[in-house]
Length: 636
Image (cartoon, helix red, strand yellow):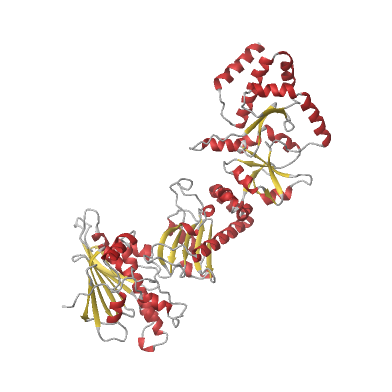
């Protein structure tokens, strides 16, 4: 009987921590064992390139999974390089010692087509999350003697001589008994193993084979009143696809290939709007396959939505959603990234936040921006479909982070145009600006129709200037952060000074305002602090009254803040503007001279009407109703 050895490096506490804390999903064990098998075959294949005695081609290598349901054993075998007794003692007897890592760091091993997945020596120990005992039977290339390593966990391990046909390694996992909380026998089910291979190891570049049972209807049964009988046959199947689509050359693939992969991978019934296939080398070396969906997920604009790209390391799935790879403004993009150069932590489940990851993320952001811009220029209909689904997210990207990404995103923005009656870019707007036009004008409201009917738009339209219609809550915030575009500042049609009149018109208006000063102060007084001031309007043409704002907080911003759960009671500095060319102005002047009480009532009615036009809530509906009724009775 072999003597039990203690683990050289760490104590029971370390092994307990690895098994119970480092790995968040017990199913990871199969990924780790398969990755180690792939490493072993990579090493022998690499040796075959310079040593003819190996006598094997790459096509000769494979991984085999066997299941013994009666004894609850899973066996993973490979015909890789195997291990000597000393290597067993070193690699499996010392926690966190990795033969793969030392092979990878050897200066002589520079073959570009050999990927060593396992960088740490702890992946193997994930087997103890599900196993009560693990046996490793191995025979190293060039050795006549095989060895059996066996352990039940923290109590240590044994190594003894054994018999084995051929080189390679066989890992035998004796599963724990089921408990009320854990069903370890689930890993004996062929459907479960198949699904785990598909999820984590589908792109291991050696075939992963398994004998699969299939039930078939016996001939002559189940028809003509003959009772149906079934027989079970066993067929050896390859469970992984081996070559990932993103590792293929673009000229080998069609749009149909890309779309089929997307729909199968991400369970979408619609073709994506576009795909982005990237292969980069240098400071950030990676392959990426990204997609822009045709439709937004049901939960996209909810707190339940989780962004992220799938992350692979040499074809092995490391994270299902790596949030750090995709910025919030492009969070609608789906896809994956595969890199050999990532710094993984010892569990290979999580990333260390290093420079390489940031370089990949920055490169992806630039690539996505360029592809979206290309779509905008070359396929406007498709881009407008994207904008309908995800435009708000891009506008949030302009606003977030105090405008840190505004220069990246400003060329992607679309807004509805008063002149074109369709969505336009800021660049298209600026190209059409009149010679005398100083600003990019915009108006905000709930819908295009409501914005189009705002009194404040009249004078701007009358000058023949184009207006951008902002109909989403984030729009005005985004433009405020942008500040300008191509040296043209943004200006709301509700801003205090539109600066549209000629010097003569301004002088005449100034004189009329001065003459009406006392009357306007009386109107403002009647509104009891609801407005900062009342003034005559230069912007109104046919409407009698409107509300504008002074300062940075607009009326639409006030509405947005009011709709938030934690209402901060942010208010715009409202100004009631009265049209001096409307007959109501003469009525107000007459009331100021003869009936200030009625002037106060009329002021309240006009203020409330202006609120209604803006789509803002009425503070006192009952008072407004009574004032209107009183006016109607007075007119009888």
